[in-house]
Picture (cartoon, rainbow, N blue to C red):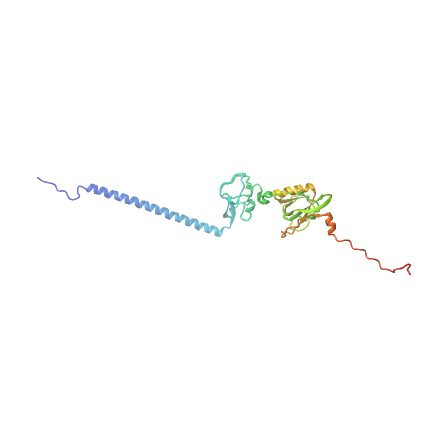
Length: 280
């Protein structure tokens, strides 16, 4: 009886070939993934290096300017705050002429938006209700009010009184049949003379072309001034801008005024010849 003798591993030939084929496929897949990852990595680095290169070239050859952009979408009617804004550098030729710039963006703070504006888009003065000058209310310190009071030739300091000046207010009234004067407000900041809110830098008197001034006051001080207008006459005195010293708050009455004035000098006796009539 003939018995066929198989060579070692002959019956496993197919399986061995199958295993060898599977291992080769896995290796090819792994190599492909590695090559793809390497290609993505190097492509990304290449693109970033090219962007940095062209950006550096642009900055060298293109004049840049800084504009203000919102950090997030802002809606119509919203009050603009410093936290809403950021500074972005853009080529000057692409910047809008009406853009809010780094130098004057403070004028935009506190203004109300007249239209929606999207994140990252340059903020324009046209987007704001007050434009590049801002609204008059923006000039007020937080918690303060603007109060307009009538003035005459004296209280306008003959037209020398201007916006940004500081004044003291005195009230003259009558108590117990006697006139008296005393200060009711000191170091008040003048916001406007008439409708004028800017300083005339020529230093020349404007003449009395206005009959009201607008001052910055607290709500409590506003009540004091309004009441004072109804009980007596207000007189303004102009301060030096660097003078912050408090004034004397005592009351001066008419009788005190007469008492502090020196008596009129005695008339000198005329010199002449003395005649003696009679006698022993």
